[in-house]
Structures are given as C-alpha cells and as structure tokens.
Length: 390
Image 1 (cartoon, one colour):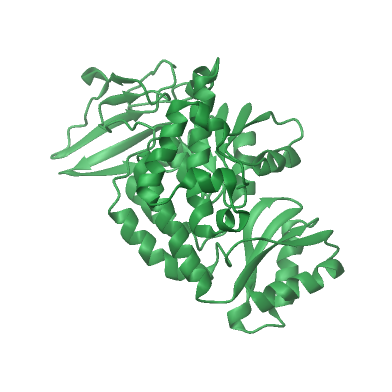
Image 2 (cartoon, rainbow, N blue to C red; image 1 turned 60 degrees about the vertical axis):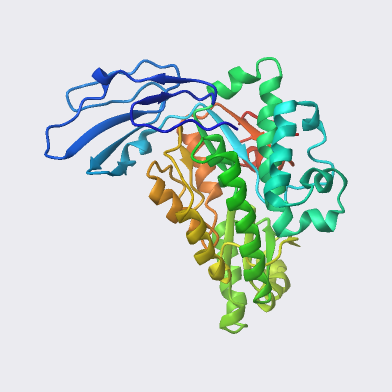
C-alpha cells in the first residue's frame, strides 16, 4: 500500500493513488505570534465550505484542525466527533485466521507483492503458512497477527482489481478493526506504511506471546448474556480466586457475545458458573493468554518503544479506536492509544452502534473469516455488510 507524504497543505483522497494540492487561499492562518492555524481536510469529493470561524462540515468528510507552535504541531481532533460515515471498511482480529487464506490473492500482482514484502520483514514464508498450515503454527500469536494483517490488506487489493472495486474503495469514509484489525485500518488510512504497520504487528504478536507465557491466563467467550449479566458472572468468579486469577470482560462484541479474560483458575470458575447465570454456552478461545487485561502489561513498554520510533501521520479518514470507540487525528495520541490497547477492553459494540447511529449505510469486512459480519448482523439485522476475502 503506497503511503502519501503528509503535509498540512495536501488534500488527500480516499484512494492511495491520488493527491491534490490544497490552495494556499484555503489554508489561512490566524495572526498569533509564532502560531499558525492550518485546516486539514479528509476529502471525499465533497465541496468544502468555510465560514468566518474557519471550517464547517464538508459533506461526508471528517475535519480537524492543528495548531503549529514552533516546529511542533498539536492536532485538535475534537471536530472528528462530528464525522458522518456512509461506507466503512472493517478489518478482523486474531481468531479469524484459517488455513487456505491468501490463495485467491495470489492472482493479483499487487496483493501477491504484499506477501513478498512480508516475507522479507518477517524472515519466513508467510504465504506458505497461510495457505498450507499447519493450523497449529498459523494459530500461534506471533504468526496469526501478521498473517491476518497482510491477508486483510491483500483483500483490499483484490477488491481494487475487480470491476467497480476502486469506486468502492474511494467511497469509504470511515474504517476500524477488531483489536489487531485496528493496525490494518490505520494502514489502510495511511497513518503508516504497510511495512511499518507489519513491523509493529510482528512486535505486538511477539510481545503479547511473551506476556502470555509469563503467567497462566486464558480467554473464554460467554454466549447468551448481556454485558451486565457477564459482569455479574465475573464478579462471582472473582470471589473464589486470588488476585492473580481475577477475570474481566475483555471484548465487548455485542449483546450475547462477550469475551472474558483472566487467570486460568478464574476462567475455569466462569465456565463452571455460566449455566447458573443462564448463559447458553461458553467457548474457550484459542489464544495465548488473557488479552486486553493487565496480564498484557509487560507488552506495553515494548510497544511504546516501537511506536515512538515509527512515523505515524494523521489518518486520511476517521479510524475508530478500540480503546474509546472514538476517532483520533493526533499521531502522538494514536501512539499512546495503540500501546494501551493490549491492556484495555475492546469497545467494539459501542463502535458499531455509534457507526450505525451516525447513519452508516454499507460496510465491508475485508480479510479472513466472517466474524465481524456476524456481529454487525446480530446488532442490526437490516445492516448491509459484505465480505471481501482473499
């Protein structure tokens, strides 16, 4: 995925293939000593209109402002709260992997090239593992995370190569991803390059695996309860275990499907008590440990160091964070949020509800599996969502 040079006077289209210079007459500055106010626009083909205060909404586009103080730019993303989504790209997280993924993408040169680049960065043949397994190897955290990231972006290239695909890509005005998928969404939104994103995902998988190895922990899906009941179930389980085995809701997916993370004994207590709380079933997840809890704290410092060394730009469209279900424009804030994401519960339910409530009309799930489509349909049976595999 080619990334564009980010500059305050560049008007960036949803397609990674086009940039347009923004007229300096549109980039007026306020008369404060050594402080300039620049308008940044996510352009979607809508006409921008300005008032005396600066900027108002531009059709479906998101808007933000940044204040430059000396050489340091401070981005104010408060105006992103007013984004009006119509078409979304949604990217899957760990657990969506399946042996055989990536095969279809090999017929598209741009998609095949992503796997070649990945092999150089990862030091092993990712496509071979994706297409032929073994499943146990593909399911390991250190491989599944890069595999899903690359395959999801390959799905974008697969879509681009089909009739009408570029038009769909150009129509996208918001993106997000489930846990790991947030990195894919940020790459699609050109916050960082494909290569830099893959390096971060590689390190993230390694750091999370090491944190999981340091303590006995696990995750379980609780099916058939609302979030209040799952919280009560966690509270009941926590009364029976010590501090090192406490559990909490880690993934707020949708009503009737919440993932709980914690120490193994705490997870076993959740499984044992679930029926008494009227849960339909529990499903132990095939992950390395208690993701999105304090058990992942050892991974944070490594992620912080890697993110500090990575050049992150303001995304060209709103990218919704898993941590607070909000879009962010400030690269420094994005770095902090990504570092904390591994210890924070995933707010996917709030994210999807917000998108639908703001008028989202069509979504595409790009990458392996159909987990996200199932969640969206469960939340709104009338929601229009299409799967684009690779």
